[in-house]
Image (cartoon, rainbow, N blue to C red; front, top):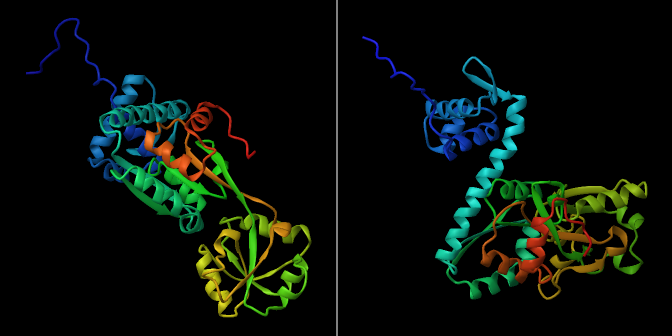
Length: 328
């Protein structure tokens, strides 16, 4: 026999919760593949579908376009609601981090993402200083391309990102200027380029070895040759300055690397020429996710790496609505 609700009773879906919000966010991140969402959230596919449906019922709108049981995209209301969901989840994470900071001020995890050049040549002093100041904090150092670093920051996998390219291109990030640097041309001793003023025309007559596209100021290298109507022969590219130096030593070509990557006391089989006048000045940036809560030791690490980026400067930048300018 069917049971009926008592007179005047109204059945409602369960109250809005963070698991519902996470289900919606991950559905978009996973390309609307609910099997992948379930794996990411350590739950079942029916559970994900139920969480999404309950939130839609709570809001009174459909967030996703459907083809049968499959999600195929966001509806117009869904596109409007998604940024609000992202902000709510970020603030819940900020709240948790704030509590953790007061509970354990000198312990935790700091995740830094950087390109190879930054990790190898620019970061060691700051890392060493940070470890001595905060021995209870675990430091995870990730290496990747500038685009990978930006995505790690956006996804919350890294607290701080450091790179020369790309970081200022993402509205979800606050990118702050750290330091300026120039490229160097590296050659074996006795090379013809050491006997005359360095020019783009002279460089273009030699096979070149330099960074992959999108790494360590490569954009400025390409633009300089293009502006002069030159088509250099780039015979080998790499993410790693040490790899570039190795192949220059083997006589495969002339190297173009970040100036900081040439160390005279170690690179005894190479000579360096300042290429700043040819390729201009590059600006390395440090980025954090817009709206993120940064624990005290994160600020300490940032200031150790870039002394001009005090806690006050960083917090002011995070409070701004517009992207941070590149002025030093």
